[in-house]
Image 1 (cartoon, helix red, strand yellow):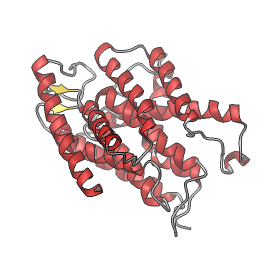
Image 2 (cartoon, one colour):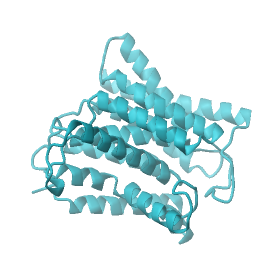
Image 3 (tube, one colour):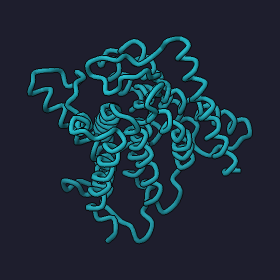
Image 4 (tube, one colour):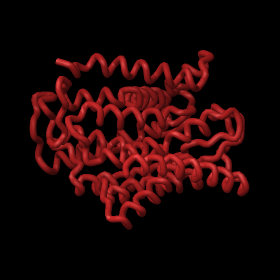
Length: 310
């Protein structure tokens, strides 16, 4: 059944991607080309739509046949962030509104059990009080979601980042995580987007709908790793906080870097510019594909420095 479901997911993603692309093209809804753009061809921001619609339709099918392969209630926080991204794609939502809704989603995840209540020895801390853990979880959620949103500036980067996190978390886990099937469905629905993202003309971008959706899913995965239920399979072992940081080291470093640059230039840390690491590599003459490979290779090298194998 699972193999058939996976094939259907890929096919549904392909059909959805091309249908949405054609529809948005007919409506003339393209990503604006301006001084900050790294593309010079028409592109629709329908990648996030493709992933969420595919996931939503598959979930409805699973619900109808009474196969709860993952907690369907997770579609609530994922859906909210997707809708926030859709609104931002079309109307450039105020960052204060986005922050407020991100805090709401973080609280929903906390109530669903995704909360950081243990520091695993970092800074000499173990368990932390309930209120402090919730505040810290909200802060970490905001950092992760916005870090993923910030790196979504070149072809294939955010897609590769979410796939990397999902596959590595599942690889190091002693058993399938409770969100295994959700993660795999997202991975499979992302695959057709590589082709449409890297096309030279008539491209498809994720848009904020996709990057906020991916950031939320990555946060869910990392919160699960930091929980007590996640255990490493033999012979792998690592400090959980250090592992989670290493899994998204590039988005975190890039976020911190651009914040420092913008604040030092007396600008809002959320004002868009071309000071991201991927912009620097593009100016050096590397293609989008090579930039993704370089960044992900360095990220994996950093992950290797974490003592996964004792």
